[in-house]
Figure 1: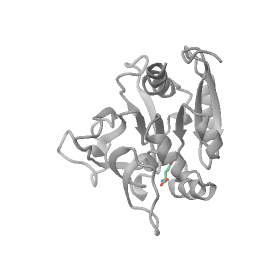
Figure 2: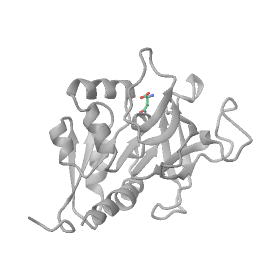
Figure 3: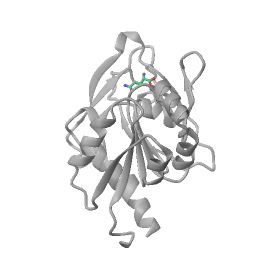
Length: 233
Ligand code: GLN
C-alpha cells in the first residue's frame, strides 16, 4: 500500500440533488500537489472511502430527505465530526447547527458549524444576485471572487461555545449590499458574512462551483483537506 503521504486524496461530493456535477468538474480542473480522486457519494460505502466531502447547493430539505431515505444521514453526521466538509448554499444550511425559515415539518441538518442560518434569507425581492467578494487567503487575493447567490441563506448568528473551535470569517459582502431589512450598524453583524471556517469545515452561502474560477476549490483542498491528511501521516 502507498504510504499515506503519497496516496491520492479522495474528495466526495454528496450527489443526492443539486449542483454536484459542477463541483466535480471544478475539482477535476484543479492542479493540486496531490492527486485528487473525486467521488459522487450516495451511499455510506462511498462516504467511507472519502477523506473530505462537499455538500452542494440545491435544496437543503430535499437533500436531507434523500439522505435520510438512503440511510446516510447519521453516517454523514459522524463523518463531519472528524473529517473536513465544505457546504455551499444548501450545503451551508445543512452544515449549520440551527436553521430558521424552514419548510413546514422542519429541516434536518448535519450540524458542525456553530451558526444559525435562515433559508432563503434575502426574501423574494432579492432572490439571486452576484457580488464581487474580497477574499483573503485565496490565490491572487487582490482579484475579486464573483459570488453567485441563488435563493441564498443568510447567517443570522454565530454561537461557538468555549469548547468549539473558533470561527474564522473568510468573506463578507461589501458594504451597502445588504438589503435594508438585514442591514445593521454593527460591523461584526453575522448577516454580512458569506464565507467562514470553523475547525475542519468551510461554509459558503454562495455557489463557487457555478463560476469558472476554481480558487475556492483550491482553498478548500489546501486549507481544510491536505492538512488533515498530513496530520494523519
Ligand atoms: N434555498 C435553498 C435551500 O433552502 C438553497 C438554495 C441554493 O442552494 N441555491 O436549500
